[in-house]
Length: 430
Image 1 (cartoon, rainbow, N blue to C red):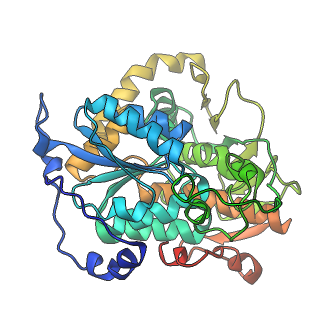
Image 2 (image 1 turned 135 degrees about the horizontal axis):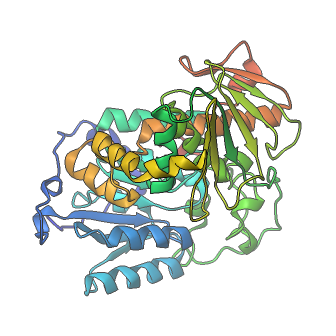
């Protein structure tokens, strides 16, 4: 692929969006990756956007894949741009990584096949949607969206533009979680009746504002782009790094771990193409004790405790149970089920073709063009649970959801909360 860089302004990129959408669709030569040594024509050229601490882990894992080469990075903060450029240049053994302040310039490059999005929550859906419109495949950190409407836009973009999307719910690629899922889906636990999802214990963030301070030079921090789609507020250095302290920057209590654990429950219940139909309010602001019920009567319980480590999920049936978390080993009842572990995981791999590595699964999907394990549809439905639950907590009452029409039943107040305002010009991007 050509490595010629094309620069564009914000205005030019937005005006050119229609032309870009109508352009002929080409499969990148990188999808034909050969075995062994990877020639330049068979590499997957990537750019990173908003890579911080969590994104740095994603970056390292992706750069470890032999087909992947990062050639660009973007961050509105100068110190991060320079740090990530140093990391990428070190891996590539050159000084060629191009750094950008404005993500639109990176997305306008025709030589970039895919992007890693690891910004704060408020940017995930808009950037992923815009990247897919620009013909890029996407790996996006979680939570994938700030609202139901953003999740819908994400799913629609992946479908319309034929792009590969991998949400950062990496536990569905981990062997112990797959084992629990296989036990449930192959009848070892009997009839499934209860799922349990582990929650982050913090409640909703506030809408606090800090006193205005003088903005730093745009090359050091572009404040307008840092805020992105959320409401304008004057600059104060305290906002930087305080994602979970501000409602405009954080997707809420159920999103933090729920984007993982609801997905694990969906995975274990084989219900990744739907969502619960009723949410029972626990009358608190962190979701402890909420129960969501599927159309077939299966209960999804939410709790901040009861697991040996973070991001746990449990599936219970009439004949047994299985759970996994970030603890080293899963827990199953009866214990004799552990003898099926290797066989069931091999069966999963043979049936699905998915790798037991979330990043490898992305690479394989880019090359084969088959959906990734945490594709945009899977990600959408898991985040519907996040946002329906958050709306239930905010309204402090039960709500009923139609997963086919994707609307609350007879509840105009709740339906108005499916979308959130987005600041111009970013409201047109997702």
